Length: 275
Ligand code: SF4
Picture 1 (cartoon, rainbow, N blue to C red):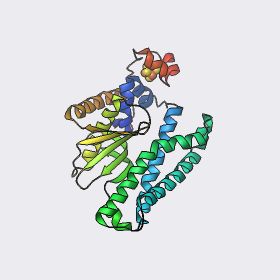
Picture 2 (cartoon, protein in one colour; picture 1 turned 45 degrees about the vertical axis):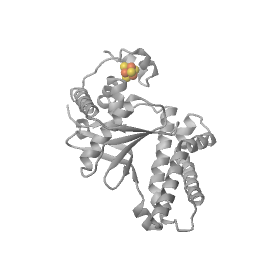
Picture 3 (cartoon, rainbow, N blue to C red; picture 1 turned 120 degrees about the vertical axis):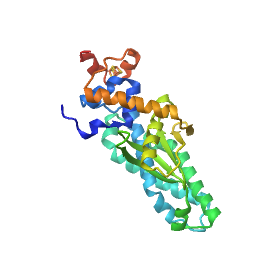
Picture 4 (spheres, rainbow, N blue to C red; picture 1 turned 30 degrees about the horizontal axis):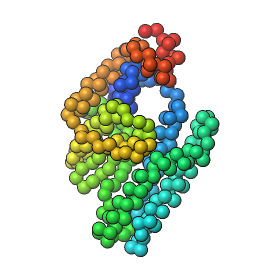
């Protein structure tokens, strides 16, 4: 058996799969089977892409701001930029959108609903920072907190974990990892957040990382989570179980909860596999 480098690492998304059903790890990481992306997953990808692009262009938006700008004007700039980004993202995903016969007009409106609060908060933060420090353009950007980075790929050789964090908010002395979810609350999101926090602690040791946020775009709620030792420990225990499935090519067998199976994209494949 040849072990590829990445086979000795656990991806943070593996934790979600394992929590749903350990056999998913075997199917995806050992048999290399791919999960078909459904409509919900596609929408989640669109939301992430819009946020990602917004983070990329935010610095250039702030550079343009000068002292005559009102809050409404700043908000307008953000809204126009966000609308343009949504259109671009929808065009980039045209093929997949057509596959589900979804209307781009409908998706445009839905995406706007999911990102609007974030756009508003960004504009408010920029305006308040401008008023507090009386700084504009590049100097305003320097003062702005938090600085947001998105889709940052992190790896830790010590932890044997790799993952891409949705969003990281950098403050002067501390970091807040943010998980963006277009669906509803699940316990596994808290677990995922702890896994990212562990990665961040190993990659940015000088910062305090003691809480994270799960941002539910549908309900527009930011759920703050205090990170705790017990959950970090559970992450590491689960990492070992996942690695054991991968390294030993061990099939954990069919899930006992058939309700999960009927909702699972691997259902047909699993039925054919011997236990
Ligand atoms: S179909 Fe059932 S056993 Fe197979 S991966 Fe899905 S949940 Fe697990």
